[in-house]
Image (cartoon, rainbow, N blue to C red; front, side):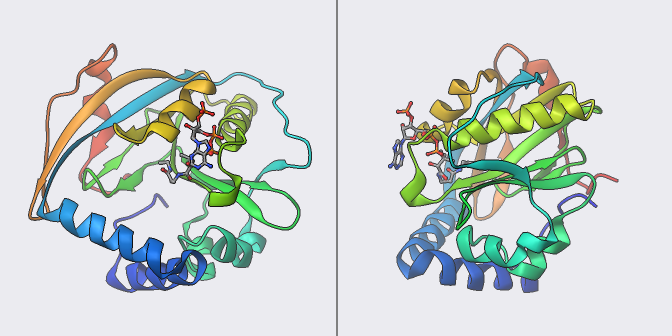
Length: 227
Ligand SMILES: CC(C)(COP(=O)(O)OP(=O)(O)OC[C@H]1O[C@@H](n2cnc3c(N)ncnc32)[C@H](O)[C@@H]1OP(=O)(O)O)[C@@H](O)C(=O)NCCC(=O)NCCS
């Protein structure tokens, strides 16, 4: 099953977990940001791409691995974007979660899909081409940032892709997310295209893609859940 547009119950359960894991201040700031974005905002989503290749990146003391249902409690506690049950419900053969584990805490999580992922900013599904994968919802715990953990995770996904006949890996990030841009380009990804979008009272309008692979953009978006 691909990630689907979340129901009200799922959204409420995720919000409660986020509140417990990240605290009132971060959750309130995020809620305020999302509310003002819903009223009126303009941004661009930048899509980066890299061919999957074997890599041998390592950070001493840290393990990159695919998460399993056994990680549900730790994911809710350490990453905090899902409750244990919504986390487990999202895992499937086409939608996986990869984590960086220091033995005590999950320091980072990134989701990877070969089917499609609901993308709140665009109010659409981002669907990677057949035989390719899309990375989204990446998060490094605040105290672990700046140690190269996200690039390490991206290299891990590239190596996983190579071992699983995935030709190419994509990742998208909002234009103004500088830490993310730096991490993604450090991992050797290059910009493919930019998709501008505007929101007015919840209604999203997507503009024309620009960039070296702008012609690829049209086949990435779907209004209906991919099968
Ligand atoms: C984006 C994010 C995943 C990067 O993770 P990371 O493991 O810190 O990645 P890196 O260690 O490579 O750091 C990337 C950049 O973050 C910035 N950075 C460094 N230390 C930092 C700190 N303590 N706090 C915040 N940002 C820091 C730097 O610009 C760094 O780039 P540089 O090393 O070339 O100067 C992380 O900042 C995060 O979880 N942000 C919130 C969620 C998000 O934006 N996710 C991505 C959208 S899908």
